[in-house]
Amino acid sequence: MPTGTPYEFTAEAIEAASADAFTPYRDFLSSGEPYRSLLRNNPWMKPPSARDELEWGKGWYYDTTVARKHPHWRSVALPQATKDLRQLRKDFYEWGFCLIENGLSPEQCTRLHERVAQQAAAERALGLAHLSPAQQHVWALVNKGADFVKCMEHAPDAVQAGPLIEKINDEVLGAGWNHFSFISNISFPGCYPQGLHQDQSFMAPYNFPEAPAPVLVNTIYILQDVDEVNGGTLIVPGSHRKYRNGETFGAIPPPINLEARAGVIMLMDGRVLHGGAVNRSDKLRYIITNSVVKPWVKQQESFLVTVSPEVLAKASPKFLWRAGFQSTAVRNMVEGYGYRGNVALATPTARWRTCARLRIAAAIATSANYRWTI
Image (cartoon, rainbow, N blue to C red; front, side, top):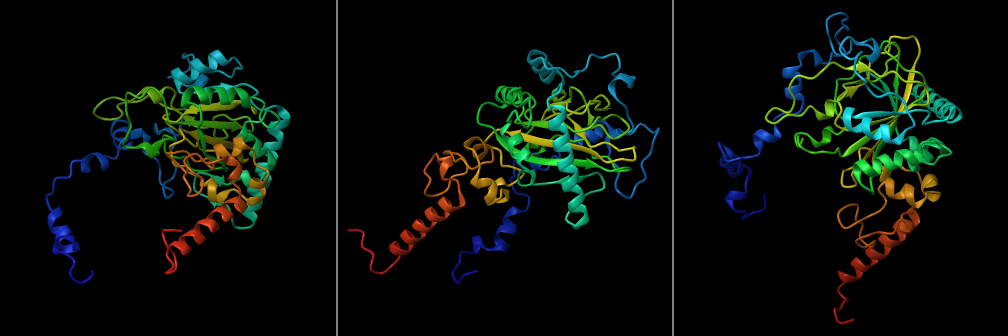
């Protein structure tokens, strides 16, 4: 440290003053919630490691089936695919998810499916694929096809249920929401299951058991028929409303595999427990997931860095807002744009020119010839 630094600011003094210190937030921040209480009260939820063999007939969370075959759920009226907005609202509130029938037209579904499959295969062939024991993820879809950009805008010519999806997102999150991430999840034959999780886990341990609404809604595009054989997503219906005071979670009901036809779109509350399932078929299973969030949430996918100049050059104001290029007084501020930046300025050229002018101003202000009187 610089000569003359007070002893109290040295590493040794700080360490000494931290022994048995008053740190009122330590236990909260290290609580491990909500997953600590989930595993303590539901030991069957423990995810297998990649070194473990998957066990069947032992009651593990991934050893399940679709709702109509499940002994716990088969007599329960869970959400069914529908176009009725009133019913979709009720399903989303009560069960934490709803199923939009024919959210994609057959042609739209085929286009997205084929494009994702081509891209995923190319990334595997080039050694660029993001692979885990559970899935291959195709990131940065926004740069990999015009239809993906249109999906982020909810344009009806790419996703025919787009206006309906926007309406539900507005009602759940409030107007002005942003995209959190937009990727494809590809389960390969014999893949391992993901651990059951919440998509808004970034809030942990700030779980707010009494919060009536989520901060994230996930949109899941079903690109082919899914069920318990090919790895229909694991989901615990109603788990978004299973919080309790004290421990975050007590006992919860078992998960099911999602059963849905190609073209269905599932909207899911970010607090619902879910995860990628085991694909027990001999073919790849493709879905696309698009999470949207309250605008103050930091995006998982850094669109400000990711989006290509070619996409930006043709981007609409709606796309720019949702990708995070719009500044307000509380987020995404960039010097030179003011407290509410105009999305029309959010191009590489405009940003470069603004930053260049500010650098020149800074250089003048620090020069010996600068006078405050001019």
